[in-house]
Image (cartoon, rainbow, N blue to C red; front, side):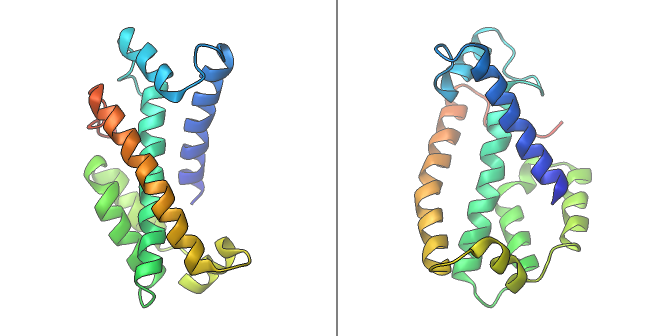
Length: 157
């Protein structure tokens, strides 16, 4: 999970750095994207637009994973991950990234250990359901915005 965590952290850092360079201009994520679209830098792999796209996709798989864990209590963590990956990121990855994902699954803990690690205290099933129902519409909004500026269909380079 270290490469995924590093990738997500890098995208967040990129967006944060852009915001910090001019907080009044970039007080909304979409303003960063509009600025890059205007300067024709949005498609660059190091752009904030690309960072927002991949951060949104990373959150897509996380939401789908928790949805699967909530809806399919009989599935292993690997089954839930594979299904989540197939529904979210697989179409955007090439052969190397897909293979890397499948190899990384071999290092995944079992379902019970994973849920204990992320669950904390309280109603785990209720929290998963609330997380998915609350977060999914925000991701949909991001995808619609990114599609409106012609960015939502970029594949991994």
